[in-house]
Structure formats: structure tokens, C-alpha cells
Length: 291
Length: 245
Image (cartoon, rainbow over all chains, first blue to last red):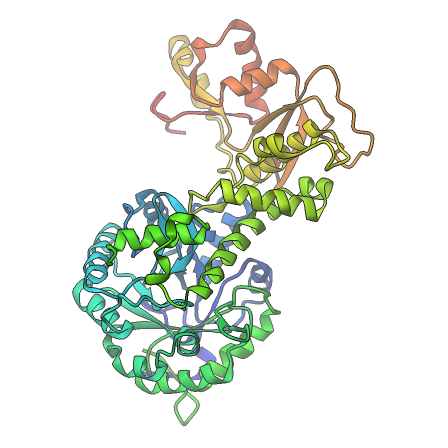
């Protein structure tokens, strides 16, 4: 199904889905968004910044959620962690889902806390049978609690685990098959890992199951010389646009998010990135492909 | 040597914090020279958190001394919550134990009180919304029911006492007074403000940090309640009665 570009933002989307190219919702842009109602089909919240939002923040959140479909993207579920799941945290996520009628919830294939201490970052998992079984169990529990499937993102990594016996794509395919979770494919992370660890990004795109991918992320990195840092502080780079073009040939109907978290530009810059991503999503007649 | 998933994660965390127990980590992550990417990120996140929260403290100490102390704090006080709003709860106490008089030009205790002021200000900003006191419902209760009703202070009211004037932190003439000043941090129209209160008000609000049946307050405290209710400082707790309002 296609719609003309002028109706690409579709507030009447079926609950539980988003489509087209969305943008990350960041606090410095909220005033602009509420004032100008930009033509953006959906926004993604950083979950952990909005849990139980009250006061002015809560008011702004409610205003945005009235006008735009929203998804959640967090880093604290600790999907791969071995300490017990934090049900206080998951409860807050569940409340946020209900409050804002959230279309999709995502986190990462990583661990983020150990023995009660938070890493405030995403640490890589060894891709082994033990990890796979562990993650399947955790994701089943999380999904049962939330009452919906979640999407799991492939992370950027700076170290590899020699213990790994599975490729990341195989691991994620099996994870999705066994648990019913979806895959959030971060194309920038594929490129970062290719440079940092020598893991083929194109192979990943070919191997990952098409039916499991629910969303694509695009972001910018910082070149540190001997490695790339997934800093989300720059426009999408040319190599990543090339990868995205390859990915969109396979994942035509999957919504895409432009992810820019640090050193935020003016909102118009994000709109330009969105337009560029949409150019990989259009048919020959200029219509936007929507699921 | 192989590690279980749990052991691997513990080694990784210990490696992140520079713990010598992570001696085997190089066998399980490669290249180990990139571990500082995770270490640096961890420090940067927590350092930014402290810098954003302890604005006045940083102003008084200067960036260099503040950052040195903050990094030391981060090493000794790992983050234990996904929510960073509460990180730094012990920073005021930490400063008390770690600032030497030769480092800064302000009284040691003043710096610690300002740090506490900063933390409370942030806590006030992020506190749960004000809950209206169901006055009409309360008036409709009989005497016994009113005395059994449990009240507590609003979540957004935070208390502090100090022997320094915290209403004028930027004032260069910082003098410690012999007796305490009592302060209340509160939120009004989206801004956090601070005001002085008298000792009796301070003590009653402190008592009401936890829900208390009105009947357990003394006569003088009960006489203060109407003012507290009018000021919007109190809420009635769930479960004390069937609150329909």
C-alpha cells in the first residue's frame, strides 16, 4: 500500500504500528515540535528519560503523545544480564506504554548491570548457547510482563568475545524465532562493528530474517582514528547510507528512525536526514512505501 | 579456562572499574586495549550527572577541584539505579570527608551544605506532582475519623537546615551563624524555589515525611495543620479512608 507524500504522517495508523521515517524525540526540540507540528510520522522516546514523568516534563510528554505516535527505546532492561530482572523498572516501562499508547518497545542485546551496579552503557554478550538460552528466557519474561513483543537491537561493540560460537545474525534469528521478539536493526552499528571488529555488515543484512525485523535505526558515529565510536552525534555517514540502501531493498516496509542523541543540531537538520532516508523508501512515482 | 555468563559479566564490570580481580578479562574480551572505551563512557555519564546536579557546588569549587572530587566519588560510589536522578545522594557526605581546608576558599561545611542544597533542588524538580488535599471530604468526617486520617507532606517539599544563609549562595561574605536556618525547597509553576521556615514548621514537616495519623500529633502540631493544608503542603494518604475526592 502506498500513500502520497503529503499524507505520510498518518495519525490514524493502527494502534501498535508505526511506519515511514521517524525521529528521536529529544527535550530541546519539544518546544519546536509543539509549536510547528512538523510532518513526522512518529517519534521515538528514550524510555529511561521519561519513566513516571511528572511536572513540566510530564505535561510536555502528554502533549506530544496526543499528537504523534510514539515508540520507546531503552538501555536499562538488562536483557542479557544475569542479575534478576528489575520489575520496578519494567513496571515503570509498562505504565509509560499505557500512558502514551506506545506502538513499540525496544532495548538491546547486551547487559547493562552486574550485581546491582549499573554500567550505564551496553556491554557485549558472548554469543554462545548459554547466552542464547538465557536471553530467550529473559525476553519471554519481559514480554509476558509487558503484554507485548519487544524489539531487540544489535549493539555497537568495541570488543569481541572469543568465546562466541554463533554469529550475531544467527544468534538474533534464533532469539527472535524462540521468543517471538522482533529485531531492531541498527545499520550504523553494523558499520561500526565492521570497522572495529571486522564483522561483515552486508553478511549480517543477508543473514538476518526479514520477517523478524520491526525497525531500522540510522545514526552517526565519531571517527576516533583507530576505531569508530557510536556517539549518535553526527549525520548519517556515506558508508551507512550505502548499507541502508542495501537494507531497504530487503526490508522495504520496515519503519526507520533517525537517531541523534548528542550535540543536537537544529530540528530542521533532523528533518533533512529524514528526507534523505525517505528517498530510499520511495517508489519510482515518489510515493512513500508504508506497511 | 572458560567462564560462565555470570562470571564473564562480573569480570567485565570489575574491568570497567579497574578492579584487579579482573585479571582474566583479557582472555575473554578482545582487543583489551578498547576496554577504556567502556570505562570512559561510564565515567563520562556519571560525571555529567554530577555536574548537572551540583551546579552551585561546582561554581564554588571550580571545575578542576569539582571534577577531581567527582571522579573520586564515582570510583567509590558505583551507580546502583537505572535512574540517574538519585545519583549523588551521598556526595555531600563524601565532600565532608574529602575536602581539605587548603583546597577551597569557602568554609568546608558551607560547601557540604551547598552540595546538599543542589541535590535537594534536583530532587524537588523531579518529585511527584502535587496532590490536592481533599478538604471537603475531610471536613465531612466525624472527629474520630479525622483523628484517624493519615497525612503526610507533599513529595515535592524537601527540607534542609544549615548554619549558613543558603538564600544567597553567591554572597562572598559566607558566615556561619551559631544557630540553624531552616529551609524548604518547593516547586512552583515549574520552578524550584527555596524559602525559610520556622523551626516548628520544619520539625512538623520532617515528622510528616512519613504518613502520620492526625491523632498522633500533639496539640501544637494539630493547630498548625490548617495553615499547612491552605499552603498545599499536605496530602491525605490512601487507605486512611475511602477517599472519593
